[in-house]
Image 1 (cartoon, one colour):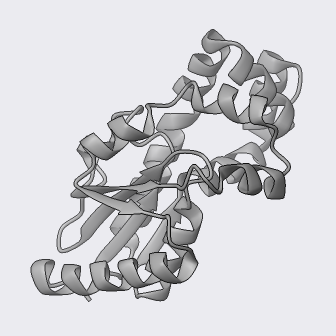
Image 2 (cartoon, helix red, strand yellow):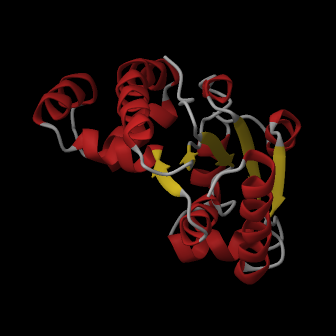
Length: 196
């Protein structure tokens, strides 16, 4: 299955936890792109009775926070969950992209490279966060430093994501700066790929 679609530019968007992916996605939407979040698709799946039943049987709970604690503590449990959830997310994303009336679709996927989905899009963008502001962002989200380290341990390092990306967006100058970069990027896409 691929995410690319005829007459569309399908962009994968990724970055480490708290790098600004969701903020970037909102700016893409503001600049005319159709946007989709893998995390949102997972949230919807977690509300389906069949999925809840499966998660409860495997992890003792279908509560997303309880499942997350289990899978981030046990690599085998995480692999089991991803093998079950990822194909469903991919199928829903492909259907959404195919039906989208927009010429530019941006799909935010935290594990874009780890899942190999970067090969299914037209190009990929990595958002790099600011390590100096990370403690404040963790506090604002109510995430401990230990929890943050445990979660990113299962992801590629930020430098590797940057190396694999077609485009790197540094998010070190605040939201206004990031918004301006995305506006200019969307203008470039319109010129280069003739998407609007």
